[in-house]
Structure formats: structure tokens, C-alpha cells
Length: 308
Image (cartoon, rainbow, N blue to C red; front, side, top):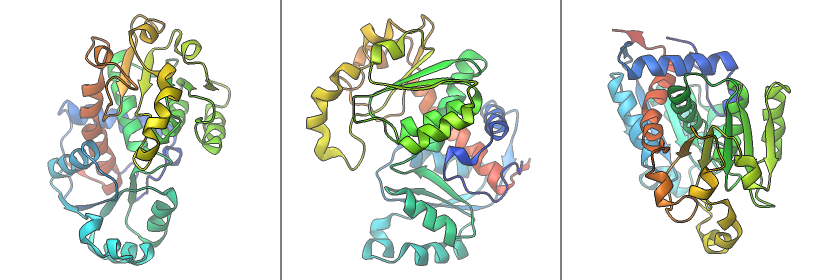
């Protein structure tokens, strides 16, 4: 169970195609209880951003492995008083076995990983959300049986989720299309990185046309139009993003068997309608549950959990 023994996960690009597939397979076995693992370790959660699914899913996953969790709320630690990141990293390294960080700048995560010898997991930054996308891939695999050759269309803001989706889809042989308003495209460096991983075997398409991108898609995905830290822009973004709403009309352009995903929390009536998120093609709640199973596999793999 030591596939990723001692390694950081700062970006999905840190994983190979085979490692992603093996993580998903382990998550399937853990979810079905065909595999039971134990790992008496301590996970620290250092979250500078609000969280429901990430915080709870990581905590439950670690408890189910037989480990412990310490919630390191920055507001009650010296981080809030300006302690340098590298100092905090070197101290936590002496106490914990693994650390999951949810913060704004990817650079802060990189500094932690540089100064801490323990494994560091990206639980969300402004640049990437790798754990979310691992759960997304697990959900898609459950629905379709395999991943290769499927097409995922992401509609909305070219944010951290869009960035990680491009990398994740490229790693597992899926086509990915990202439709955003002009000026809101995903990170250019990650686009090129995803295309390099795809190596012309699958497509990584960036467009401003949501309808063309949606035609024939097997998975239709969206996220909020203003991410954490962008709340002041929310009202200004509404008219710009309105044509990118996932509604019944847009969904009708996708494959008849298409599923709808949203990483949550959702602003119903904005990026997605209530009818779609509550509709028969929505797999949003399975997707949320799978955060726990795939992160359990990730923790077990990095920490070298053993079979019971």
C-alpha cells in the first residue's frame, strides 16, 4: 500500500497515469470494503480557506484508517500573527506524519513542502484542486466503467478546478473541453502541461463557446463563478457568465447518457439551475462522497498503511 510512500501531492502533474489509475482502484476497493487498511498516524489540517467537504472527508478518512487528525486553524495558531511559513513548516514537521494544506497561493504550499520533510498534500490552492479531481475521476469511472475516450466539458470560470481537470483528464486518456468567457481562461502554463501529458492522444480544448463545447459531452461540469477570495467580483461577473450556466437547454446538447458534476458549494440559479443539480443526470452527491474514499486511498498510499 506504499505506492506513493513519503511523497508530496502538490499538483496532479506530480502523478503518472498509472499512479492515478492505481489510486482510483484502491479507492474502489476501500469504498466497497474489499480492502481494509490501518495506519496509526497523525494528519494535520492547515486550512486558511473555509471548507466543508475537504475538512470532513480528510478527517473521516484518517479516522477510518485508525489515525488521528489535528485541525490547525490558522486563527488560533501563530500563523495568524505572522510566523514565517518556513518556521511553521519546520515545527509541524517534528509533530505530524502528514500535512494537508488549503490556502490561497501555490507558492505557500511549495514553501511548506520544501521545509517540511513530512508529505504535504494540496487540499486546494488558487492554482489547483487535485484531490477534488481525483474524486471526480472516481465518480466518472463508477458511472461509465472506464475513463479512456470519454469527453468532459467544463463550463464557467477557468479556476483551480478547471486547471486540475485538464491535468487529470489528460492523465487518464479523456478529452477535456473548457468553455469560459473571454479573459477567464485557465492558467496558460497548465494548459500547455496538460497538452504535453495528452501528447496528441486526447484533446485539451479551450473555447469561449459553451454550446459547441457541450455537444456530445459525456460529463458536464461547473463550479462557482467567483471563487473564495473573489467575492467582491461576484456581482460584476454575473452578466458575463450568464451564458455559461448549466441548465436544461445546455444539458440537452450533451450525450443523452451524460452526467452532471459540480464540486460544491453550488449557487443555484447562477452557474447551475436547481432542476439540473437535482435532476436524474446529476451525480453531485456521489461525487462529494467520493472525496472521502479517494483521499483515504491517497493517505494510505503515502503513509504506507497495512492490511488488517
